[in-house]
Length: 105
Image: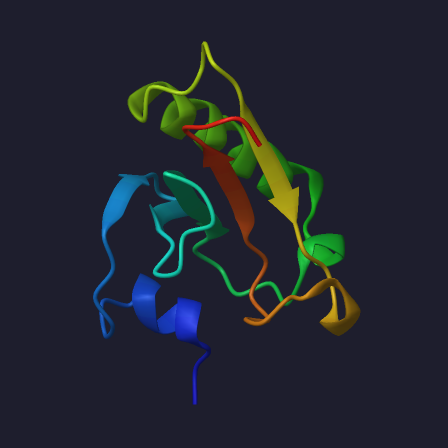
């Protein structure tokens, strides 16, 4: 069975998509920890952040810049976060970059 995020990429599970490119997908977290909490993922399944190559990392950070701008948090600031591995709190083992903002963190 494909992972949760792969199923979102494939359109099997609905998500509130806020940005997409041919290599990335960004959607709202269903359990937000801030007023703006968006997950940015590679469309290709990669288990965690340490497995991403340079091009994939660049694509995720470029998408994060676009999401921050469209969500209106560029000026006030935002946090980017990877959880990597079970001890970090990673729950879905498909690399994902959290973008959090909209209030003082």
